[in-house]
Amino acid sequence: MPIKILMPALSPTMTEGNLSKWNKKEGDKVKAGDVIAEIETDKATMEVEAVDEGTIGKILIPAGSKNVKVNSLIAVLLEDGENQSALKDFDISAPVPTAEVKKEPETPKVVPQPITLPKIETSSMDGRVKASPLAKKLGAVNNIDVRFVQGSGPKGRVIKDDVLKAMSSGTSLAGGMVRRNSPEYSELPLSTMRSVIARRLMESKQNVPHFYLSVDCNVDKLLELRAEINGATDSKNPEYKISVNDLVVRATAKALSKSPQVNCMWNDTSIIQLNNIDIAIAVAIEGGLITPIIRNADQKTVFAISKEVKTLVTKANSGTLSPEEFQGGSISISNLGMYNIKQFNAIVNPPQSCILAVGAARKEAAVVKDQIAIANLMNITISCDHRIVDGAVAANFINAIKELVENPSRLLI
Image (cartoon, rainbow, N blue to C red; front, side, top):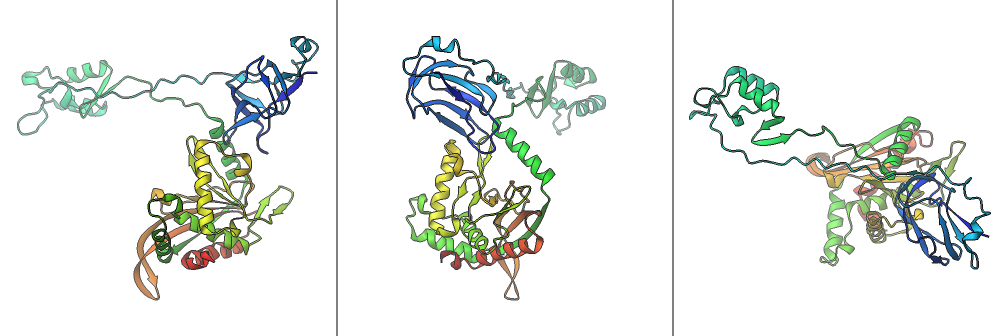
C-alpha cells in the first residue's frame, strides 16, 4: 500500500514551512536515511530523510511552495513491488493542503548610476553662482543644484526657464550626481524567518509584561584577565581565544545556578522550573537572528564555553543548526558591544524569563576606592517577564552577575 510522506514538524513551534527543494524526483528509488527534500523553517533550512524504502510515486507539493502546513501530504511513496496503478485507489486529494506556490517577485535593483557631467561655468571668479534669485529659489525647492544647470541667460546666467527645463527632463541635479526617475522604494518579500521574528516579537511586547534593570560593571580586571589568558595561548590560532561574551556567559551561568527563581519558563497555567542551566546566545545571521543554546553552561569552563560558542556561531551562519541546538533555555544573552552600543533594552524571547543586553566597554570617570579614576565600564541591562520574575529577584540576579564580572578570577573556578 502506498506510504504517505507528510510535511514534517521540525520544531515545536513550527506550524508551516517552505518546501524549498526536492532531492528526489518521481520514479526515483529511495531507502531509509536518504535525504529526499529540504524544508525552510523559521530558523534554518533542514534536510528531510526518508523513513521507509520504496519509489517516489507522486510529488504533490512542488519545490518552491510556500506556507505548506505541517502534517499535510507532500508526496506518496510506492512500496517495493508496487507501480503507478497502486495510486488509482489511493485518495490523494483530501489531505493535500492549500499550498501557495509562487516565485519570489523579481524586484529590479535600483542602483543610482553616477554620470560625469560636462563642466558648466555657472560661477563667477569670486565664487558666486551666476543664477537669477528666482532660479536659485526654484532650484532649492526642487532639489536642483543650479551650479550644474546649463544657463541660457546673459553670459551663461541660469534663469527660471533653465531650472524648469531641468525639472521637466526628469532629473534632479545635486553635487554633480544625476538621480534618474525611478520607483521611490522597492518592496522586499518577507522570508519565513523574518515573518516569524516579527510575529514572535510583537506577541512578546504585547503580551509579556516587561520590566528592566540596568547596572554598570567595572571590567578593568575582566579585560586584564582576558588579555592574560589570550596572551598565554597560541596567538596564531583564534580558536583558543576567549571573548568578553564568553566570560559574560560563564558569569550568567554561575549567577543563574544560585537564582532558581530566574531559571524558569512561562507555561500559561504554570511556571516551569528548569533543572538544567541552558543559556541562549543571540547570533545575527543573514536575514535575521537565531539563538543557539549553551547546554549545562554552569558545568563548563570558560574555554569549553568559548569553543562551543564558536562552533554554534559557525553552524548558525551556515544554516546547519539542528532544532535541539536552538530550542529551550531560560535566558538569552544579546551582546551589541562589538557595535559600540553603550546600552539597550532587549525583548524577552518567550517562554524564557529574561534576556540580558550587554553593551560596549568604554572608558569613563568612575569612583574607584573613593577616588575619581578612569575605568572601563560595561553596561548590562536585564529585561524580565514580570509574570515569572519579581523586581527584587531580578535585582539580586543582575548584581550577582556584576559581582562575578568585576571579580573575574571566580569565573575560572
